[in-house]
Length: 192
Image (cartoon, rainbow, N blue to C red; front, side, top):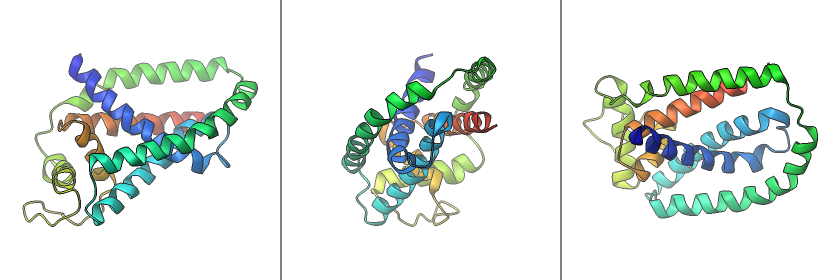
């Protein structure tokens, strides 16, 4: 239980940072119940892009991510202070929507254990986690002759590297990926 909780706390920290990056950008065109999940997904893309930029100049460190996090929170706080009162006035709980979200939450929590199995084969071992580990170890991009695809696009690997900075545990990257899938599923449910 402790490992499950700690991995998902790390994943939630990265998803919270993603929300803080995405919300100020999307608040003009994202309204209603879709604002939160889509802001997190937009922010995940932006965080991945920022990690890649920091990696290109070899300053991808805990300090640089901390600066990004502080700037994101400073940019998001006034937006939330302005938008929360209108959210409260506009939000009307639909019993069917709440029932669907609760069912989805139960399913997501039930299957979340599978995301934390140690990775032993496949792309995770040969590509995704080694590239994320190299980003953290070298503070940027470098060619690794032992990784098959060293210069493939590294969107998820950049997010995994942020999680690996918090803890070198590769299962937390699985928790982050599962969290992104759950957010996308919630967004689809709220869309329709």
